[in-house]
Length: 290
Image (cartoon, rainbow, N blue to C red; front, top):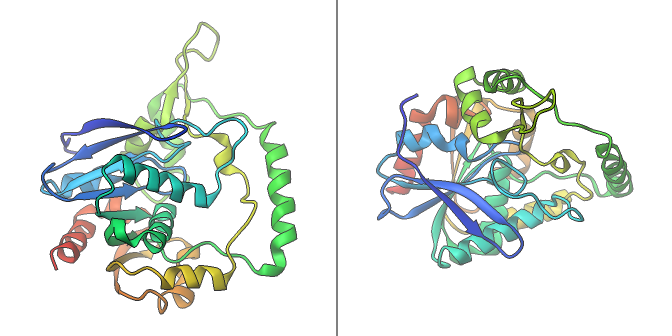
């Protein structure tokens, strides 16, 4: 892929530091980009190449990429990511900006836009609709599974790879893109081990293992629909024709609820902003110039 000039950035929040990068025209309005679960800021590199006249600010969410992990006594609750975005927006000057979110990042962006519309000019969702929900009758079971997953996590260890290419190949096997896109994510999402033991020089994932724990709670369908109904900024949903099943199942529940939604479907898989960046960029450009 053709390289794009990036400005590497760090942002000090109350308890941790976020890492990210900025691309494009710094005089243009900020488009804050939030990636999906276990991805990182580099998932937006193809869009940065396709939108050189726009200012993209992509961050690694806590526990992902190069950003710090939460403290040892914390976990990764969904609503805490909304707080992270609020802190970041405050650091950026508390001015309204555009939000672009993929998958989980779109859900975070949607929740933030509902609660803090004064900071959001517009919202772009990339293969992301609604929120993850669970029936109210599953509350006890959800809690039990979460606590057990925390116990099991203590016995888990990250895999090691002899090269960055080997890590990227493993990442590719779990997703819907080529080795090119896998390398983009792996370059930012791995660390090389120091030392003199038999693992020195190997690569492993930088993501916090706690990200894989089961959530201790879920929104009910009614709660999620109420939150989505409160999203007032103009919203564009770009959905993948071959996306993940969870997003397809969310359509009947959430599509009618967004107050100001434009809906588009594009050919591609869940990471279509990486694999079909020019088509996604064209939709975003058209939406933001309206």
